[in-house]
Length: 341
Image (cartoon, rainbow, N blue to C red; front, side, top):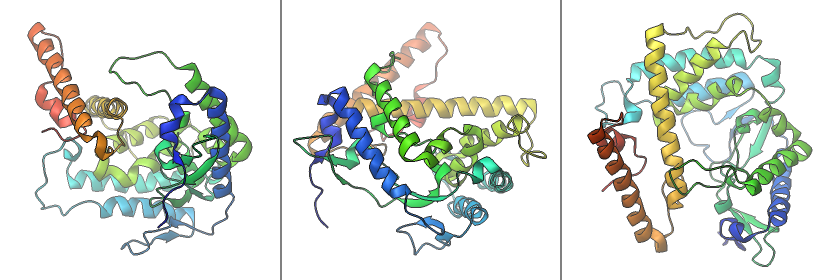
């Protein structure tokens, strides 16, 4: 295995001018264009050809079954004792039931002309962020290498509709306070959208679709990893908007009772809060989503991580004293995305 040539774009990005960043985004988009131009006869992974589930699906119906079967394959035996976790608060039977409804829902969605028009088998890098892109040290607008291909696969183009690389997203917020949008970051986002529209119209068309049409595909195979909350919410959302979205007949997923809706929406609010917490910690600690940091920064990151937790925990204790509504420290520990010593 050869070493990547150049330096990480993550290191160069903060010192690049706006013009350099936009030129770099165009170069990255041309790499995406080259991948998207390759024609494939089926969907599937490039690497995991020895998994027990078929690793290639010849049409969209088979792909939909593959998503649900993947979700089911990740469920543990019903009688297995599970560790305490906020993501595992739902029973295996609940996951199985939701995935059964999910299969019917995504099969109906897969017949919609809008979905089929953006379903061509498409190769795309699964983690196209600044840490995985290498550029010339002398000219950071020149792409020299792209690494971390192991999760790349051939998926329907619409599966990438919500993929926004960090070079085209909002400026990282290194605090827990909301801040106004960064003009430079907004220009980068607009540049990326424009590049996709011109160079990879298939992906651009997918990004223009109503998100409710696509999110059931996105969460169905990840219910055991992320929890059933997100997938249930997407099923409820599309069921409530079925006619509004121009979908035929009725949604296979029946809406819960009004009392059930209140409970489930509260659970989803907690899920969203946990996601926001994790994203801000990633920015604050400068880690990957999995919490990885370079060895030389480990001690400093560990200290900053402890300081962040202690600070939020103290704020919650103060809120309890003053009678303000707040979660407990135990609830915070359950929501916290990284290990706490």
